[in-house]
Length: 161
Image (cartoon, rainbow, N blue to C red; front, side, top):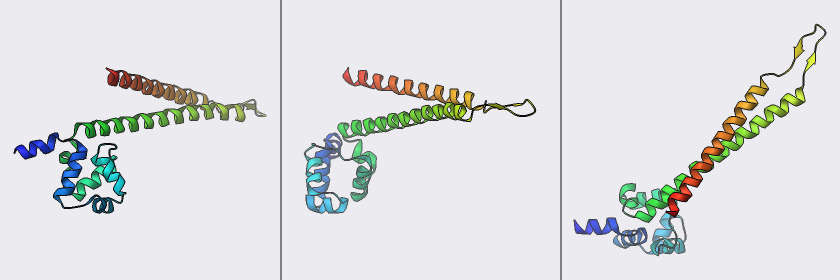
């Protein structure tokens, strides 16, 4: 039981090293199994770098561990994965917001390029639907951008405290 507690509170580098030595693997052997360089394994074991999420999954599969056993035992790894997930969500929101702004601008541009004209019977032909759609897309893009900005500021203050 105490050995399990020691493994849980160990940093991720020592955890990888202990798993590797328990399975009687050299750094080169593990690197071959994970399709990375031996130096990468060394940098993980010395805590210079941490693997990304797909690599963590591959490590867990290699040693036949659950992700909980592998990740949750190390606070720094858990924080890195949470930070990476947060950055991915913010990047996704930025892309969506920017796309909405561009589409809104394109609606206004299309409305201006198509223009309006009167036919021989006096009917006005114009792409009126593009204007409200353009405003809606611009509004949604600005709201998304503001949400992203507030989240980034909140994250900055939360980590600096």
